[in-house]
Length: 317
Image 1 (cartoon, rainbow, N blue to C red):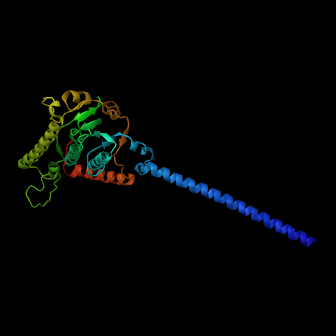
Image 2: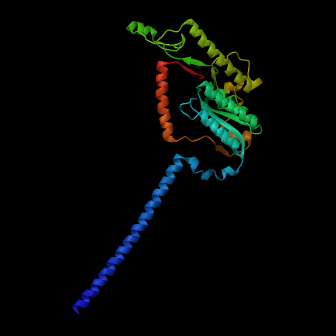
Image 3: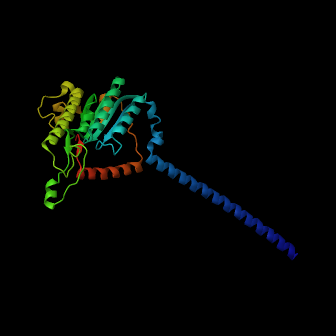
């Protein structure tokens, strides 16, 4: 009798243990599913923040509506930072390819920069405008559109500014340093070999001859004349005859309107709503990988710093 009771007790214990093990397994499975789901949601959220263009859920309805396309030109115009010339051109081309784009706003906040990159953007805007004459292009200036920034703005059909925007600075600058007197005082001999007597024209440790200075100035004048022609072509008879217009001075947005460098006061939102007549604005500015952007900016900062100390720097700003 005792043996039968022990057998029943053993079976009951085994059954209870098996049941508890099954419950624990189910509980573990549920927690596993929960944490996997949580991890997946976290990754999706991170990717959405880091690469919003990849998850364009909020733009799905927008893509089916007529909209104003916007492309940003932000910061100094440079090849190293990668955002400006290539980014603006890429954004513009994507905007024009969209069948629902009815107008384009180039939102500018730039002090200028490299002349070739500014010219690249300006020429591409003109080419696309000629190819799509039914899509108007407006430039909207935020804090500033100076020098190279204005070079790009001049390609737009109309330019809108804030009263406090800085506009103009139509000129070209080449800068650097000269250390020849300091080297003489310190008794330092400069040893530089060149093939071509003017190859070291911008070397900061060598004197610049009158002939070299005249050549550099002639080159700057030629680039300045190109800049002036771009502005005259873009603005036409809207420009005033102020003698300082192309002197390199800059003005407030309000004064720029008086001088014919801009057309009216407006932001991206007011231009879309009140001028174009479409409230929906879709931004086509390409997003750059954050790590790549950080690496490029670090490299650009180091390169620009060394360039300013050891060599000349040509820019329209």
